[in-house]
Amino acid sequence: LAKTTQPISMDSYEGQEVNITCSHNNIATNDYITWYQQFPSQGPRFIIQGYKTKVTNEVASLFIPADRKSSTLSLPRVSLSDTAVYYCHLYNAGNMLTFGGGTRLMVKP
Amino acid sequence: DTGVSQNPRHKITKRGQNVTFRCDPISEHNRLYWYRQTLGQGPEFLTYFQNEAQLEKSRLLSDRFSAERPKGSFSTLEIQRTEQGDSAMYLCASSLAQAGGYYGYTFGSGTRLTVV
Image 1 (cartoon, rainbow over the protein chains, first blue to last red):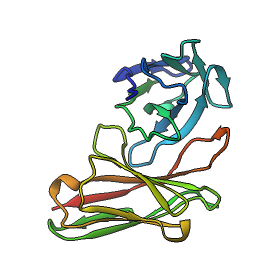
Image 2 (cartoon, rainbow over the protein chains, first blue to last red; image 1 turned 135 degrees about the horizontal axis):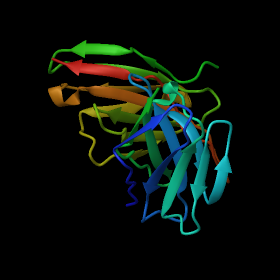
Image 3 (cartoon, rainbow over the protein chains, first blue to last red; image 1 turned 90 degrees about the horizontal axis):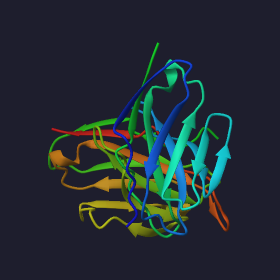
């Protein structure tokens, strides 16, 4: 069963780029890689998804190497409001997976 | 459409009582999921529906938990004979799953259950 591993926490400063890497060594062929952001007392919010290579949207970029055993969420120029927990999640239509522990990002002024 | 709606937002119940939560997904989404989240942990999968069919249920889920999605619209999650260990945030999510595409879950704000 595929499992994700992320750093427990990260600190950054406003205006910096933040990269959060997730390991998923046993990723299955049919798994999509997705990332979510969660604020206290709210449900997670979908940020970005990808299958391979690089994906970019208006809030983040997702880098996936050819072997797909890891992925990196890149947040450009973070602000204080980006302080949250970020989850890497593998989605497979035939295999519902629990989320890992997430990475607690603290953005400092 | 205002997103995924969950009611109530908070529920305090005495141990041994039954509780029921409701989730209204995004109307065009065909999949609905229930997750449970405790403090400091990621969401734990409980069960999911494709339209009205319950397709998967976590093996860790007690028989005291049951979920329904009549007519493929809203869903209810019932917990019978609640225990203190059931205290958690119960999250509902929906998604549109179609051939060749996956567009991420949209989560509701959750129902926080406290069993005293």
